[in-house]
Image 1 (cartoon, helix red, strand yellow):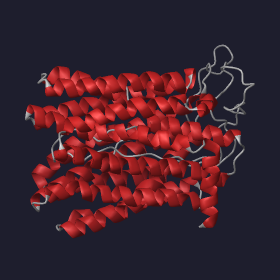
Image 2 (cartoon, rainbow, N blue to C red):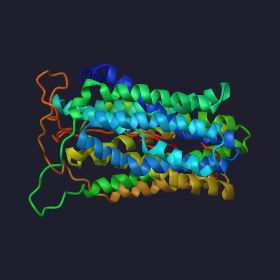
Image 3 (cartoon, rainbow, N blue to C red):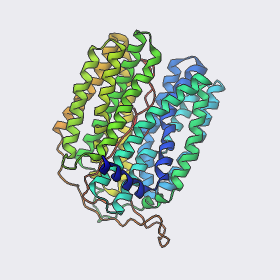
Image 4 (cartoon, helix red, strand yellow):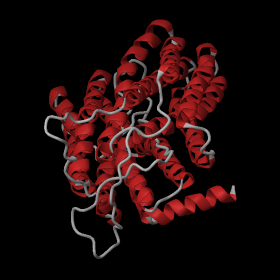
Length: 457
């Protein structure tokens, strides 16, 4: 235990004590905006359908434009991209609040929601990319690399537990508009602080690597596409879980417990994610991927047979054990098998896959809950977990990295640094770990809104 604590101290020494603080608070708006927008529009319009449409366009904006922002960060550096996105996102969120309170029609509200989602500043993926670059620059060992990503994953999970809770408290104490207004302020303040932190210099960006004339740009390894599929299915599992929890708690006449039940899954996942920093490197990524997805299948099957609130609490809480290992391993595999110059873009693609899976599954699982009760929605979650396990079994995972590129990454605190000479993380042979997060809220069964975030849950 003491060794694990010392490893995390090394991580903080790499990033500085303020970067994790800035990145954590800058993640909260992502966890708040989806749930908050659904609650706000439902209350101001009186229509769950309108709320679902607005929430859906918010998710669609993030899914479609997240990779674009990631590519821009790879090319031009994180600082200008995050600064621009944070400003646009804060303004768009504020406009969404004003439009909902002013009684705007569905179409303009949906358009504003799309801009809000498209401008999410990707703090999670970019913080992970930056931390990996810092660790590589320092020549950190595998234990530190693993702890970096376990810490990032834990902050993701904690933010997606606290975010919806803040929205719920604000809605009960005042109005959902207060929660979204707070989200706009957080992204403006802490998104800007994250962008301006000196460590942004290690991801200053640069042009794409030159290739011989006629040579095509290399594509990510096949395992990367399989990982994206696995993350899509993980998102679908989240969607089925949300709809099933909402349906069962409504049947038991304890709808107010739905958010707490879902949050219990995130709390356990966060704890396990933090503990993964101590997992020995001999447990390779292929083994972790298969073990995590297999555990998700075994631990989700009891959902099909539960009918009590306490049984639901136990099953959903224990299921959290399988969440963080899968997300951490998926992002680790992404980091290992893509070019360093495309790391932010690839992380964004992985995160968008998670959000897309949840958005797609929520509509289906809501219908299944209407037709077959809670077990119908839970069947979507179990089916998605099973397909993810099969994908992990059949995908060939190379033993090492697909390429070895040595990148010169400067110390962001160096006074002799030349502008623009920093490149992203190098590709040393390190068995790194990555982490993902989850989207916010538990919408009513049948609502087509998905949990948002750089990774939906």
